[in-house]
Image 1 (cartoon, rainbow, N blue to C red):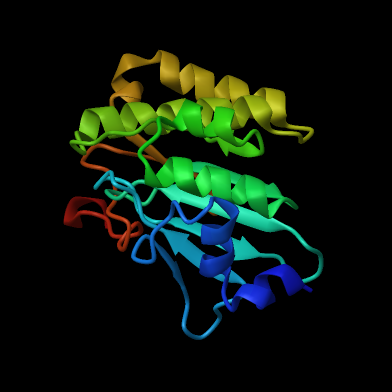
Image 2: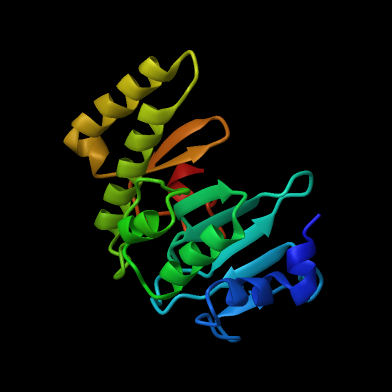
Length: 194
C-alpha cells in the first residue's frame, strides 16, 4: 500500500528523503520488525519523547503522536495522507520548535491543549492537564458535550479542585492530591486511597 516508502526500504529513510536529509540517521528510526509502517523521530529537547509515526493499514494515511517525558501526556497528534507534511512535522518536533510552531509548519497537527513543562513541576503539569481537559470538553461531538463541559468548567473554577491533577480513566475523571501518575503506573494509588 506504500510503494514510495517501500522504495526507500523503511519509513525512516523515506522521511529523511522528504526533508532533504535534514533528519539524521540517529534521529529517525524505524522498527527492525516493521520498518515500513512505523518510525520515531527524536527531539533535541530532553523533555520530549520521540515523535511516533504510524501508517494506517487499510488506506494510505499517516498518524503522528508527540508526548512529553514525565507522564507520557500527548502534546500533539494528527492524521494526514501526505508524507511530506508528516516529515515537516517530524523535523519541527526534532528541532524543538514550539508546539504552535509545529502546527504552523504542518497544519494537520492538532494541539491537545497541553503545554510543555520542562522541569516536570507537578503544579504546572496539573495546569497543563486541566487545559487539555477543558479543550477536549469544548471539542467533543457527543450529545452530552454541554453537560460534560459544564462539569469540567465547574471543577476547574473551584481552586481546591484546580490544584489537583486530573486524569481520565475508562469510567470517568479522577483528581489526584499528589504528583501526576507516572506513565508506567497510572493506576497505582497511594496506600491511603486503596
